[in-house]
Image 1 (cartoon, helix red, strand yellow):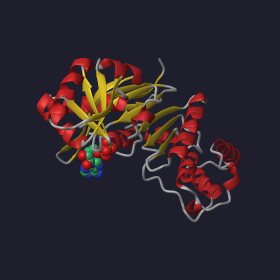
Image 2 (cartoon, rainbow, N blue to C red):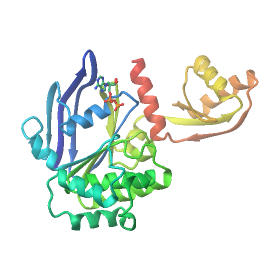
Image 3 (cartoon, rainbow, N blue to C red):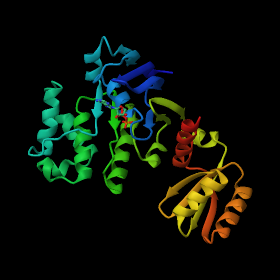
Image 4 (tube, rainbow, N blue to C red):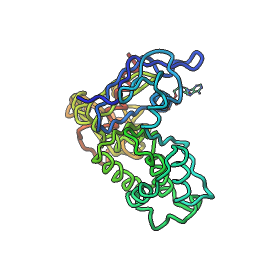
Length: 306
Ligand code: ADP
């Protein structure tokens, strides 16, 4: 396999806080890799270290066979990074913003590439519009175009669709899958587990460590459990009771309550009995295969109680 990103035992602390604790990862060329985990897990620290924007305390990182400590410039010339704080120049037009990033990368003849990127992101007809007057989704596509002007081999995306509306998110994902067809490798962090499902492989990070890493399908199979989804009155109280009296893993999603269990039929009977005794009526229920979100919440909780 052609490994394009190699991380061996990477650690990083901020003062006494160990943000990343000895993680290792190998990413093959052409993969769409997703790093997910709760806030503070260490995702941004990892992505910034991969881009050469912060130094590791220990461990080795190499990209495209370049060592990040020795060949930082070579690496930076070949990667694109779209961070949460990526800033466009609001008073410059779409065209001018891309031109600006071309200049930063020292690219003289950028016009053809710019046209290509504008077509690709369907921004051509707006090219003379100032960035400050674009919608959130369009700004994000422009930021993506800017980070692709130098034809990077690896694209790093740190929560690229946070705060972007669902339609634009779908659009953005279409662009990403086209990039993959062209052979680019994508390493991303996302808080949206439905997006993580689209990655070839996903790593779940918590408190600076990787607690699982596999394809989304294998991760879901691995816990060998079912989810009982219940719609009932007073879900909060119901959740509290199920957790305290039956010692089950309870996850609340709006007006629904999910519990991750090994034996769904018998556990449902226990839940039904408990809720009836407490005058809480069940309006609807169903037994599902766990979603990636169910599995991740379950794994994070289990890793914290161990
Ligand atoms: P994530 O991206 O998963 O939310 P981060 O990598 O941003 O996680 O942060 C990991 C931990 O390191 C958090 O506890 C965060 O508060 C801390 N941290 C991140 N950056 C700094 C910094 N510059 N100085 C001090 N602590 C930081």
